Image (cartoon, rainbow, N blue to C red):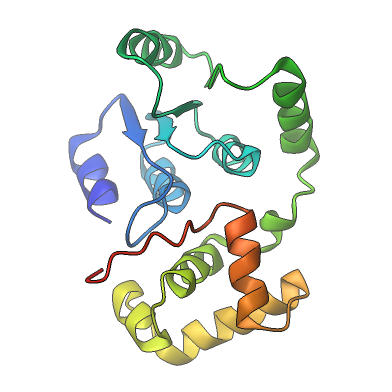
Length: 183
């Protein structure tokens, strides 16, 4: 939420953003930023290299996606490329992976797309071990609304248990289960 607020206040040309953030995932934050600042270029920098994350980042309009292990020279080069209006995808992907990713973006048939941005937020909070009440408080909605979103997520994905939902989130890289105790 802090990234969204600062971006709106500072109006930067480019934003480096991680995917896994504590309260609002990077893709949801980027979507909020792009609604207000459509000309701001967003470059994701993440330890995650799941093509699903890259797919979601590109689908929501990110200018690029890098892995955190990239060196400073490559980061600077990617930022220059993005600022010049070109896209950039981490060089660790093979040409076939990039082609498959771009085809998936064009087709828009990924299972993850079935759930809304708000539902993704709720799913991440569930995977982080938060209760409906805690999630509701963080997102400033009612616990009943959180429960309704959970039911919608499960129905859309054809899942029946919380364990199936968490497994889905792990497979899609929504959560890595590295939750801090005091978070």
